[in-house]
Image (cartoon, rainbow, N blue to C red; front, side, top):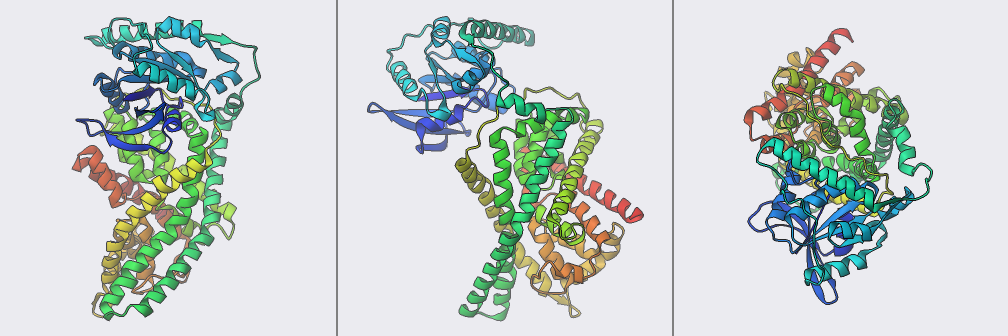
Length: 599
């Protein structure tokens, strides 16, 4: 078995994929429940098993990823360890390489991204590096498939025992008995990495500023960076809004035609017919028609920005704001994940090392609207505030996003000063060079890993929810549907916040999936036992003031049940789960109350 270790963003996974191709799977290593990417390749009649370890900056464990990498290497299951280094930032990569050499017998140094280093005027003297460290060194460019044969041959020699190993070791392990001793050992690794990099790097003639440097003059500028971030957000939302309308209508038309055909073909009792077609089928088809097109546009665009290397710049820009709020800059990354799905954002909070700051990120992730809330925002903005202009609608939606970010910071500051007091910690943020996005991989990853998985989860909760909602819409008390009875009872409470009882009930019944809120609201307001077209909202007395309050409540209310369940699994705390539901709801109702007073 061969282990692949390395810092984040050094092309380790790209190299792993280039070697293994499609011969990959995810599985546990013996005695552990942690999933690791595994694969194999064949070379000169032999099969080689590879394991791709999580990216880590050192083996002095701070994050769960670093602990996983350290535990695997200490288990001695790997016959050889390949440490993938970044040729453009060799000194930093060598810190991890030296620590791996300290605890592993057979180590191969793979210096990747040599093409980017050459463009930056940097050359790596592999022979000098090999003589200084006493381990084989191979230069590669995984993106361009360069050096792969040399790497395979080197690994064959090492695994067969033909490559002599004399690794340079400090002889002090990777940690001390006290924190002071561990810090002293860490400083020795840093000094040795600096000295080694100085001997191995050759600077060629000075070249013009690289593509990354030129773009970062804009994207990381103190003022222009924020303007660029807003423009990119605006562009993503505009394309999502403008592009999703026609496919959503087409999908709904197709579902309606299929439903009508099935109703004619399948004969059953009236009650069962209504439950199946008007309840379950109508709910599931509405969720798919409303969710799928925006996700199919939003996720690939968002993944393209991620693959391009822009999202870490967003974290860099927002880091100072989160530190002022008493949180960690990594929270900006989990917040970005939340725009796709709050449950995914909550799971992403694992990247935050500090337990206090991880709780802050976990409790405030629902302050940003997930993909399930975007259809509600898009419909309400289009109905009352866009005046038929997609550009104006995108601008209003961007303003909503900025408000959600501001409220996230405010809620984080509130928790920092009350429930979760403490000192904000620092963290290392990797700013990878900008790279040409891998369009095919982006589409596959965004469609399979994000769009379809989230859609499947939404459908799973929409089907039983549809049955329950249909029953409530068709069960009557004094000839009035139960939905309207409850909404009338809630109406005085709703009017205090510029809403209505129907809106409050729709959000309550839409808790399994936010995509159900609008269809349920229409059923209540139109007294219909089945779903209606959203254009009927305007005909049902839905004023612009009510639209404004509903938009605010859509931004800030309790998370969906899937997200709440994820919060409980991550925190193992019923109290924190309740707080995660109560906090955004309190903010939302407070804002709606103020709007009702002054608007």
